[in-house]
Image (tube, rainbow, N blue to C red; front, side, top):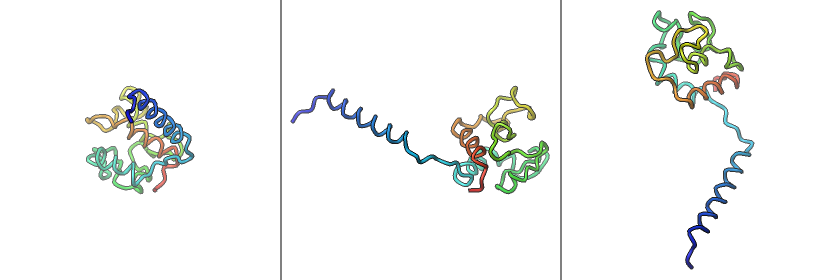
Length: 133
């Protein structure tokens, strides 16, 4: 039996559409995890400068969840659980230097900005309560 390429394309398109429709309507929603999502971002992009409370890092230690949530930076708490818009951490990585309210440069300083996916994960994690999960 010979298949018409247009008919095959139609069936593949319908199948893909139904799959996406089912997937988009799923009740399963992803929750950002500190251990799985946030800590790896910090390890690769932030720890080189923010490994301890020293003068070069604004006294912000991102080496552990406890250190992050202690908020012992020169600018006070950096995470407001449930409120990314009022969290210095989110502002520091998501806004260009000229839009920063406290800092004078976007983080990571001197490096490429975080990817949109990383920024979204940080925003979601904070808005979901910034849990140690």
